[in-house]
Image (tube, rainbow, N blue to C red; front, side, top):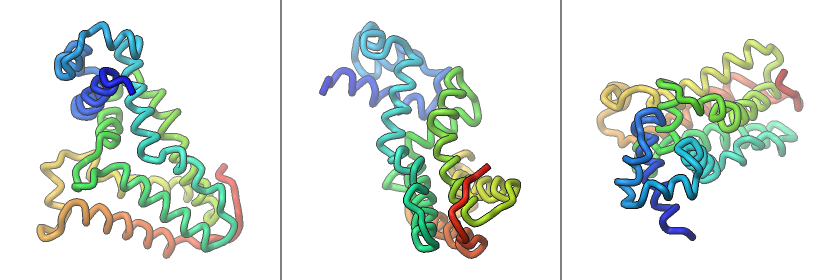
Length: 209
């Protein structure tokens, strides 16, 4: 393991998640990592290359590949429910740290949603769309109408991402004061899952259109 490369990535992930690609400079990253600026070019070519490497790392660490293919093993109602639950809880856990704070992956997502960078299209197509498509394929196994599939997908995403996309100052207004953030994120994921299985019933394997 190249400790210098890892140090650069660790600092870069934190800064990109906090401020976004546009507002973070290579010099700022290198100063915080206590390395020479030339090392970013050596390891990553440029700032965009470093940004992409960070996203790739976070995607794999948060089981993005598994989420993209989570519908593959569905063959009946039970495996469908398990896949739906796995998708909802998988995405929810990717958005939060174990202490209930917003994760680095969620920070990247929020920055690109609020203030899109030059890498936004790549992030959207390579990392967000495949995860979204796996959800739509699961929904299509229970819902025929395409517009209804999109409404369900939008509702699920919106509920899971509500805390991530708004400023943390607002979060206490939407969470009971006697519940820790970590516990609340889990309960929200469970609530969303129960909504889905109550509102949709697996009928046969279908493909999203």
